[in-house]
Image 1 (cartoon, rainbow, N blue to C red):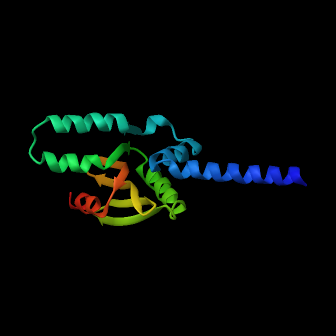
Image 2: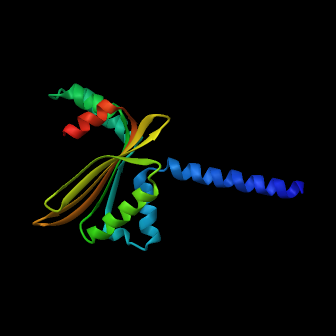
Length: 171
């Protein structure tokens, strides 16, 4: 009986640990896992990451330069821990549909902030909170231009507040 309780407890702990790891992965990481499971080739898209170390270098460069609006740029960048950009130009409807399904499944974590649709182009901004602090922003854009289609996800992680979101929405 004790052995069964120990095994049950171990299973519960492992399940909770796996769930916690999944919750700490950024959206693009989860999205890429979805694509891999679906058998999508890495040649069908590009994904670039600017991690915490590179963000520190970018902040240092901004501090060293005397640019107009330098303070505003530096203030915005201090909130950002990492940036990931996913882009695809073929099969954009499939990429968009996979993204929407993942957002629906992750609805308890990601909340929509703003959504727009104009002339076949759609964009939406989603946020994830942890302990009443916004820790992740996900911008999803699907564009149908005369020169072709494009699907993009811009994923920011860091510590954001409502002022940051308001400034971002003005851009």
